Length: 493
Image (cartoon, rainbow, N blue to C red):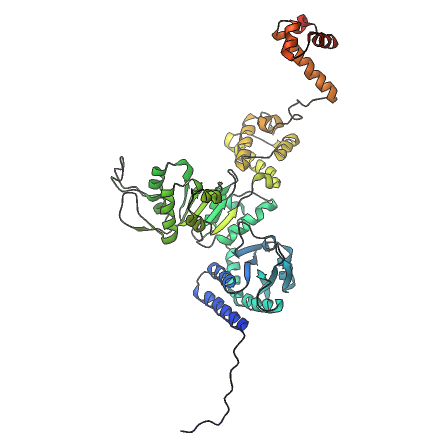
């Protein structure tokens, strides 16, 4: 056996940072190969960046081919609404796309412990989007190392981003009128972006917001923009049903399951197969129903009430609530494990008082709708009425505004909605003609005179009794009656 006389060269191990980076790139490559849908690929890539690297939040934005608007098509750990630097239309993201240059902003975040990296994504010579990431400053290596690593990722996903962008050309975005969401206020921009980001997936969505803000419209938009759009969209108001009835409504029941159950009933989850089920007021679920819903979210299986056969479901769950789920968890009224299953992709719908730019737009839309429904010709709304609408705080949100406009449309007789057509809750002293006039002293004198007259009427002009009623001496009462020139016999008529 001939032994080699060549000296053996010891291999120098790669630095741990390089091994970690190679592992990350291999994982990203595998995600791109394994997942069929572009939306799933992009979401998977962001998940890999979050688990392997120093990424705390990320988003992939694309330029819509029809309008050149920026749309977030995938997001990771963005919370109820994306941080400002991730919102579509942010100047940093647009600048990175327009200049085709990476942008790095060090020391951002609450404690300055994050570096924001925004990388253009190019395909066939055109910049079509951007990869935006929050990277921990403690991430191994320099800022330049991070930028080079994530630039490679941007290149690896460019083809998938291009396909996702092409898909947008064939369906409207969430702000399109086809979704029935009427808004132009800046506060609604994150809502539209989050709808666009989640619509194409099957992720469970939890819509938060006050009563009357339009959470059902958001759920409807998610369904209409999803691949399930041709399937059923089943809505369930959980607060309107008693616990026993709710179980039967959601999961169905077998004959004889309870008194009055004479035949098989198909539940809402079965009826929604292939589509979306919207569970409104999810915070009102009884503990027994919470357990069944948790199983559905975890295993996609359930049994009808009174049945033993296990059924599988192919349903996307969108839930909504105006209640404080965190507080309910603290008081053991809502299961913590169910909360985390529902809170996969939260969307917060702002109250109407935070989107005042939409008040007149919504009012005009409701006027047109109710005028058509009632066969009335309403041509305009006065400036005084507009002032009342925009000054009011709208505790009932869009639903309250809709009711106000319906009332006003019914009341008008001259093709115009005036301030006095609006409910008393919206009226002010100036608009109702009850505003106090004159100086403070004149107003106080008028109030005092009115009290004196009322006391004299109640006591049939008995000065002594009227004085006791008002907490005055007879002398004080006589002086005031003389001062105001009151003639009881005259005032009483």
